[in-house]
Image (cartoon, helix red, strand yellow):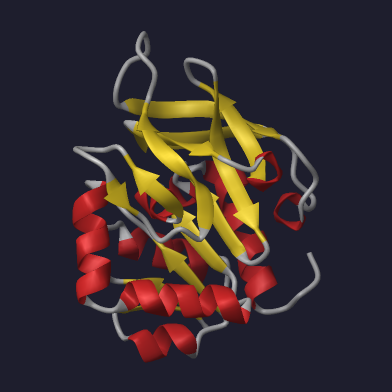
Length: 204
């Protein structure tokens, strides 16, 4: 069972429906025990970084997500959910994140249209099980901030938007996608499928 974290900040049902189309069991919950009992967890997110972290802390879910990372339970952050995995964000002041991945979330560079909305090419940086059987292609982004990754080994894929920016990151069992895989056609669904297979301990 994969649990999608309900903290009032995400497209929960579209992610759930995408997983169900792929024949994986998925539930939506804000109960820490549900998260701890899961094969994998997805942290979606839309909105402001600081508000999202406040809601996670109020529910005690920040500690739960830390526990999941220590256990090695696969965790995937999507869009704002990916940004929350990092150390801090400069959005509307400096805010502390979950610090599961070292790095700082910064506003997209000057000279590009903000927010970044639309399809951009996903470029693989290094081999990873998430990419098993896949070719590079286009995925769908909606964001005004990006993660400046501190350790380059955590950078799995990039996109070009005013320069190379992090599109997919990962370390051990913690992963993040700046784009929306559930809205990214076949490539996005295949990435979700590979993540779900990792959750169920299947070989991908």
